[in-house]
Image (cartoon, rainbow over all chains, first blue to last red; front, side):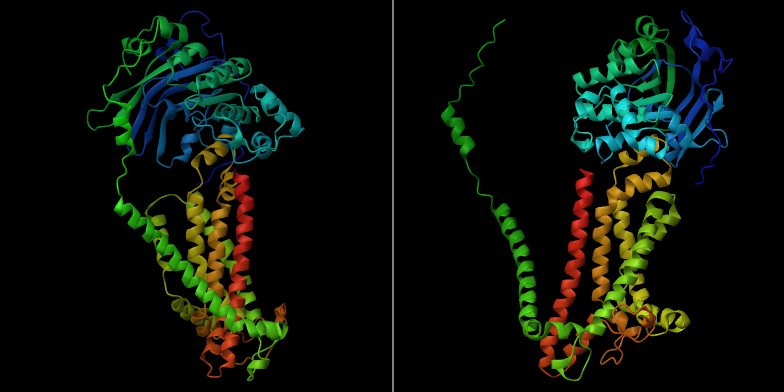
Length: 294
Length: 314
């Protein structure tokens, strides 16, 4: 598979509106409508794995320096959707996407877009902490090295670890293997690793599902702290977490297909988090956030 | 709120203890345990007897004339014969295997696992490589004779160590590909995802994540296949290794004479073992010990490198 190089994605372009569709702007009702510039505009996106449609007809608008949470029951396409934002689904040969996801107005899936360049700007933190089998230092330095960033690597590593609130715990053992850290530390290391390449967006796929409540709390604090510099999209099964950390919330659910025994994810509602949890427009959202379903 | 005492179950501790202490006689478990131990012992004893027999058989040779045995050539008299020419052949065969089978084998494995799409064609190729690994070595000898001795004689010089080395490199190539592919398949996908997620290209992920993690497994497979190549006699006989006395004795690193007639340790062992004079029996044993030593040295090197990589893996 050839990956055309040379096309870069502009990073600091503000897009006032990505769509005229009324349902896309639904999330901007109420206070602060349109106050944040958009980073991503998602229009009528469906994702297929071979012939199976995993998620269909999603419209979203992701604001800059906001935390957007994707919630919903298992198998409703949250992770699939998340992985479209940095083209990680390209790694699955059968995956196919319809519709457009624009990043500062540029369709991420148009011809000439290099997924490698996309992923350097849109970082990812995975469900299970996945430190590389290298030292703590080399884990952080990995991204800057492959991106051939200039500057003092020691300083860069320290900065990334400080931003991820891990520096004080590891500063005396930077040469130790990252596998020796606890689960929560490993996940913060993975966040630091993602921050080290200075992305604009961080995608987090259930980053706390393998962690205890204390480690989870630290990651949530961390998200709150870095929010001023980054745009974050987080998939979570934990509704309290979504309520605590996110500014906007997208509720997905799965509908059973009539012709086959498969389930396709749909976006039910997308709005400000307070509204989603206090006064959702859709009954299904209300049932889910109040714990009556899912 | 106070915690109430646990409900009494009405069974005395003594009765519970009796039940818990009951030991059932686990006959199948014991039989299996003993059988497993016996299989291990059997293998160890057979190997031990073999090694003892060889070392004691060849000991006189090593004790009385170690240096002249290593540096001597093939002669009529057992007391003057040595394995210099055979050592040279075996060394160069090893060089060809390392230089050809390792890079091509590992390269093919990386391509199959990391680059090629998973479709019917690649699955057919995969199955065929597995089948090739099971083809008897004599068949590779015929291939080597037809292709490298006859067709490409201008390149190889005909019945030369070049032809023999390439033939054995091809013989072990499928095994190298299979073991390297298995090692690459065992690399956790987390690592690849982590690399791609940071904006690494496919080659960067392969070079910095996949290959370092798979290195110990790849090493084990390649060194085992090297050992196999160094011990093969049948294909070499077909590509024209000299079974018997070889006149020329160029230096170990005389590259200019690689296109000349050659012999190798397994060939010399075959030849000496067939001679009627009892003196050659000791030489045979000594030559086998030398082959074993070379293979063990290669394995030891692989284990050392493996440990180094694995300690990095954590």
